[in-house]
Amino acid sequence: MALTLKAKLQPVLLSGGSGTRLWPLSREAYPKQFLPLAGEDTMLQATWLRVAALADAAPIVVAGEDHRFLVAEQLRQIDAPVPAILLEPIGRNTAPAIAAATLQALAAGDDPLLLVLPSDHVVRDAAAFRDAVRVAMPAAEAGALVTFGIVPGAPETGFGYIEARPGDGVRKVLRFVEKPDAATAQSYLDAGGYFWNSGMFLLRASRYVEELQRFRPDIVTAVRAAFVDAARDGDFIRLDKDAFASCPSDSIDYAVMEKTDAAMVLPVDIGWNDVGSWSALWDVSEQDGDGNAHHGDVIAIDSRNSYAYATRMVALVGVDDLVVVETDDAVLVAHKDKVQQVKDVVAMLKSQQRTQAALHREVHRPWGSYDSVDAGVRFQVKRIKVKPGARLSLQSHTQRAEHWIVVSGVARVTRDNDVFELYANQSTYIPIGAKHRLENPGTEMLELIEVQSGDYLGEDDIVRYEDVYGRA
Image 1 (spheres, rainbow, N blue to C red):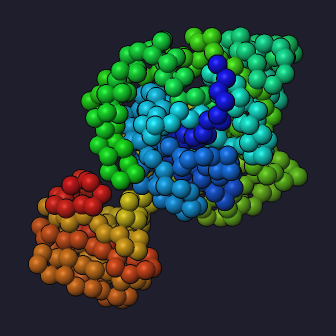
Image 2 (cartoon, rainbow, N blue to C red):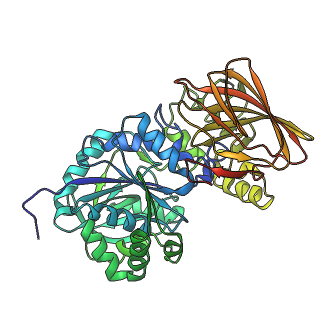
Image 3 (tube, rainbow, N blue to C red):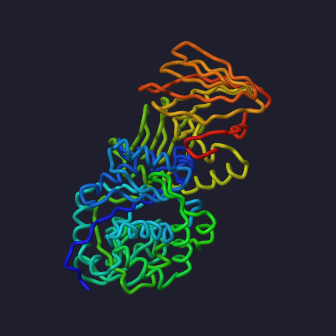
């Protein structure tokens, strides 16, 4: 039944992906939604900016526990309103994630329209997408679960498809189709009426709960328990681990959209791309006259249709259809037709317990970052950056000593019972077993060099006594 009052629009940003297909740039600890892959803003930032003009409330973000400070910091950088950040202790796919966001939205006493958006997609025509949301709102207000179908530009085999009833505007979904082979995809293109499944949705919060309860009450029960028993720490809402772990893993498509009679689709042509591979990133990047796209200091000679990402100078000579990605600690060279196999590289790295599967050389922490610039037998050298006003945990190490040399900024050092400040070109020594803490009391970034020495230099040799980030 149509409502007389316009429902509020509540954006929900899904930020739980691990981004293995864009390795080595995207990694488990710093996946693609936090990277500026298709512009100056990161993909998470671009997702919010795309819909900010439509929003009636600050975003609800669903993210992994390890990414909580990345989400908060990146949204702060673009002056986004303070979000509610729901933290998943374990990934359970989109149906539970959206359910948790729905409970958060309903907890405020409203029944808003949820605009559910993956935070790692590219939309080139943001204005056209906003117009599409406005077109879809009446159907969603009336109780439909609306998805946005992308008008296909090619017989793509990497996407699922939605078959829609003929007509204009928002229309009935006839069926969802799994990723097809090339011949089937071409037949869809020839027939018309088939659209790529974007994974973007517009639905009333209460209607999603109703339909999820109808088809997957076990998911509703588990997520509700996780939400009720959640620990709340400022903007962070930590879903209860045991309850959420008991929740079945399922996508919104399988759990609800393929079963409900309320599924509708609005076809859109908005320059959408899920950037699910390096070849997809090449598609959405600016290309030169030879079809080459690049990021960073890249020289291309007698090369065509290639993509290069460089942190140092990279030269391509006489190559076609290649992807070359160079980071501080890894280099990927792949044929564009084989980039889906990058995930196999990540699987191999994990099986060998190599840190490059999850971490970059520069590792981000809530207080700043550290970059392991050199290492050898019984020593390691790190470049440490501490944000203004931030401080590390009060900690000690059982197997290593540390030397700190300040490069710039002001360091406040706690060493056992002593507290003192160091300035540029000054240094101190932290012996094995000493309780110590590093703080930045200034207004500028603190940078220092840390030299570790000892029998074992692993990150797990840390005993925390106090920590403002809840890691003690």
